[in-house]
Figure 1 (cartoon, helix red, strand yellow):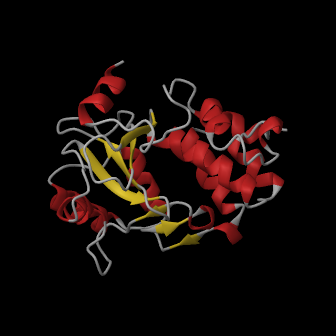
Figure 2: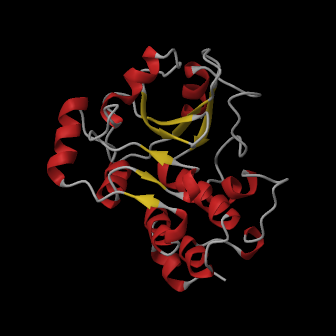
Length: 221
């Protein structure tokens, strides 16, 4: 069943409501205030994407979905937070493209960022890039055509895995067919549902890794 409320909410709204309705699965920090957001944008030299800014107004750093998603705080952390994350990863030889704004990881080996080239309007959809722990250029995968769609797919899979309450799945708008966990199918059915235009619904930077040019070509298509 899909709750009527979920039919009128945007993708990111659905995700945040679903997280609120399944508190046992998440660790949240207090929201970022406008001064903190402005300071981060000044340090970056550009606005944050609108969807990412909305997420930080919800929680300034978080580990939702049983720790299977980790989002860096903007600045207040021992290692500098989101503002310096891309440069830190590059210093550790992660192949982070210049057009990617890193924001966190999957709680294991992989890192996530937004494809956000200079000059991109903050209101535009921001594709999600996954970087595998391969430390070579062809270790990227396109994990979402837009940040909110990525979060919806990722949340659907892990909320079902964590046996989240039905009202959380209703808020997410999750179809009945996806409410039974199938480890063999993995994330692909959730990406097909939440992000149907994603070229590869099973993003894999290890077996099907791309370099930055390959990701850019996918996004242009």
